[in-house]
Image (tube, rainbow, N blue to C red; front, side):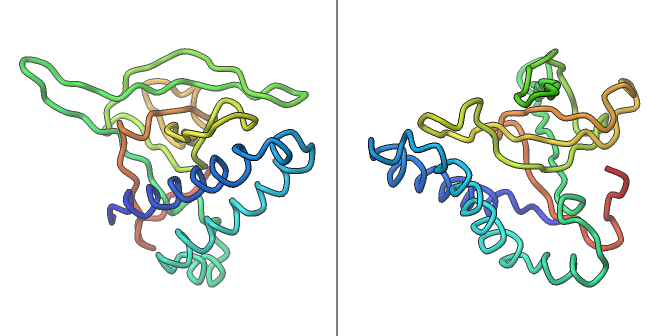
Length: 174
């Protein structure tokens, strides 16, 4: 696996800067109902250019039909501080039927006990200044909490690294 956290950070900062300076700062654009949908298309294009193309993932994805999400693993950082370990905190999520997301339990996790896949950078509201310091993840494997497999969670970007898996390490099943 190759650490690509800096590539994702560049993408995150670009999206954040574009929204905050060009859209949110303009009172005429800020409240237009079609702006979030248009911006989402821009965000997808930026991801394709700044992440997938830069890492040559889109060519590989097209070659074997694999979704790009299976290629990016989010690995919690675990640090030894004094007499104990500092571990990452994962917040479980539930999607509402009519739209929206509810936050659930907060669980401390270590890299060896969970497999997380990158979905997107997350902000609780898209109609405000964006920070995008949270990573929305798909929980692909969690042996100690099997009820959370194939669900979603949030984790602070500062608590993780993002890795590109090679073809032989591709994670399947989400």
